Length: 117
Image (cartoon, rainbow, N blue to C red):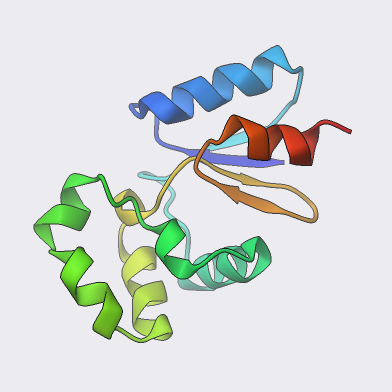
């Protein structure tokens, strides 16, 4: 599994600790230094089954400084994919990518449901 995170993010640290406590090994990737490509963002979104808005780090400084709350509703899906691929700091994290699932943001109940077999 791939664990896409940001080292300074408190939620990412909490998720990483949770995974370690469960004995779940992951391949860690820093979203700031190795941002997802346009193709990867598109693929992750489609595999997740989530609304595209869930992929935005809505509490981030970049999201707020770009006034995306007001701009997103008028943007096409393709424009949003391109925007997300432009800067990893726009993307909500952590993202956990398994063989048959993509989890965005750390919600323990969701993660437990997918990982507790």
